[in-house]
Amino acid sequence: MRVARHSKSCPENQIWYSSTNKRVVEPSNPDAFDAKIVSNSYTSEGGVIIFEGEISTVGDNAFCGCSLLQTITLPKSITQISSTAFRECSALDKFYGEHSSADGDALIINQRLIAFAHRVKNCQYIIPKGVVAIGKYAFDSHTALQSIIIDADVESIHEAAFYHCTNLTSVIIGNKVRNICKEAFMGCSALTDIIIGNSVTTISDSAFYYCNNLKHITFGNKVNTISDSAFRGCDNLTQITLPESITHIGNAAFMRCSSLLSVIIKAPIPPQITDTTFDSTTDYMIYIPKQSISLYTNSNCWVKLLNKIATSTPSHNKMDAQPNKTQTPLLKKL
Image 1 (spheres, helix red, strand yellow):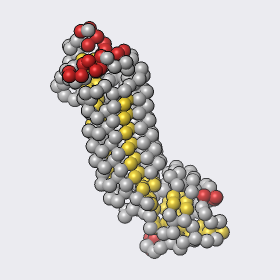
Image 2 (cartoon, helix red, strand yellow; image 1 turned 45 degrees about the vertical axis):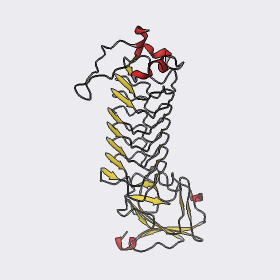
Image 3 (cartoon, one colour; image 1 turned 180 degrees about the horizontal axis):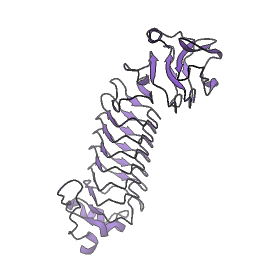
Image 4 (spheres, one colour; image 1 turned 90 degrees about the vertical axis):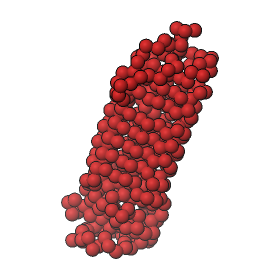
């Protein structure tokens, strides 16, 4: 397909595309559009899908799994694009048209980043200004992505947005993000560092589940909820420091964190936990504010952990060093 074709608007009853084998690509779900497909052909200029009328919707699984799809141009009449429309398009290189980012790497509609081109070679990415949400499955299984800066205007990271990005090593979450949704970074097995911004209040179920190389988390000062299995299976995590704002830590939130040595909780009021929040088989200590001893020892959900609780923070020579565990746990004092 010639670049010149991408420089002009696509008619509102057409979708243009190119394929790696220069042949027709059939939509996975031909019923995903709000107009009937009239024809689908391929010439020297590329492919064109023609509809019987103007289209405004690219629905569920429209091109999901179309592994030969290389580029796509959508008309400006499009007002709705499903989060699954371009999943598993492993050869997708560029988006064109009204809803593409300036570099063509991302598809953006209604200020939400819907999809990211799988063939992008740039391994570091900064979310473009004006994007307020990263959509469901937006970066799903993107293997070239190594670092991401979620700054500018982003307020929400939706479900499974970075699911199974297995080469993603570092994430910086900016100060406008409020929610990290379910499974947002699940299975990012190379992830080592996370900085969570100061507007995040909720880290949802399995958000960082099985990020098994995660070593360092910097929590923002407004996090109040860490939901079920949020950091389960992060077995290289050695220390966590939870802010004063924390009020709830869910089931298995830090289960199977086999290297965990110290949990520093700055909250003066004991957060709600369950019997499975922390792994009972792991040799770690929990450090709480000294002035809050009576509150923690009289809290029903903390009483089973008194043999692990102390009131002074651990000493470290460096971030990965073992903490000083010479302090007597509260259970032995009482």
